[in-house]
Length: 309
Ligand code: GLU
Image (tube, rainbow, N blue to C red):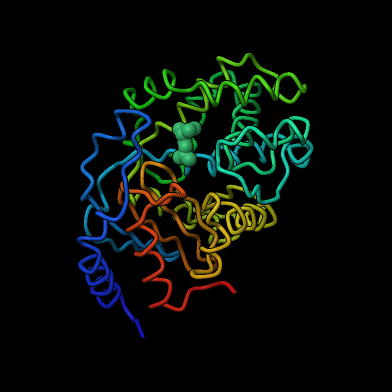
């Protein structure tokens, strides 16, 4: 039983020490050089609680490319902007397909299964690009505001590489435009989407930025209401069923927390009423999820008895 901050710190250190060699079981994302060049043995874990405390171990203050975790921030911004009309353009079902799959989108007439696969996140990017005069700046300032940290940046090398290697995302966007589900011009939508993928944040910053999802929509760091309690519930539900790519069922089965991962090796898990756990280690398994990050989050969730089920 963990009763205080010192015990939590000890537990994080012990869990991390046990993972020291496990990164060798995964493979760093190689589709862009900017991700392939990150040292593969870096790893960290942070736990932020809704009483404002943060504990961390390892490289938990080292910024990394948040990649798909950015889909959570974009989704909240789009929900706040469009309200329930958003759900006419993107659904909330698991896809059962790889995150960048194009097959389902043709069958389902350009309406993505959910907002955390690439097609869904591109619809969200379109909402933001169409509704903000400068959607990239709005995104960055939203994330900085959530973390109460103005040092958060966009990695321009990652952004440029994503643009150069973005053909599949462009294909998804053009297909959806042919069905009338993209409003803005495609280059503008993709530029927004790749910008948000290229944001760099540490485990600590990420954990703090998502505390509102553990606190019924209110950021406990400054009492700002970020979204309604109902929308916090909805985002957590989507993360529970679809946040871990095509391994979401297994993650729910073994860990039992709403979570989102990214190909930069990051993983965030929300514990409603308690806080947010974030882990980072670049090598990925065959589903695109961080090997060590999953082990770390599973370990602390078990240790603290955090499953929501
Ligand atoms: N930038 C990546 C892409 O769109 C994000 C993928 C991910 O983290 O799942 O392909």
